Image 1: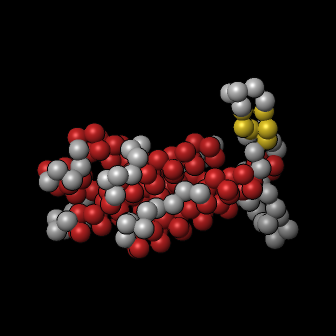
Image 2: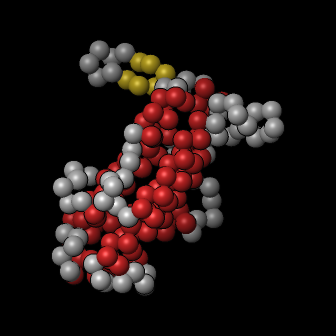
Image 3: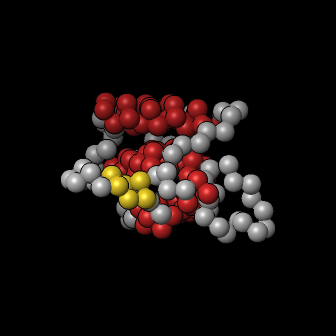
Length: 174
């Protein structure tokens, strides 16, 4: 892991600069290195719908910002993902509150209320239950988790879609 100091804190993380992460074309088998700029472009293209409450979108922007800086400090890809898991919970609480179900209680109880009211289908409830377990595992872990950027960004994009579907049922399912 990059040992941050005043000389290197604005330099691309050596893991990202090493070229170990690549794009592979399924069409012709070509391989290209992924640059820090490529990671940033992918991340800034992931957004929450304007139908999602602003306070949730603001939390999401902070999580995405942490991931953007993963090009400079590789662990920030995972740290941003861990934060967006908490943003997802904030989204669920905001939806429950907007539906008059209240936003107090534990995550399990709120998900159950949303399912009982038909706001979440059985499949959506199952997806959100996985998010809740992942959030718990990362929030209450005593160890640092480091994920490859592609995995972190792919999960980040899936969570954005899941949050969007809470407030816009027309959003494409994950």
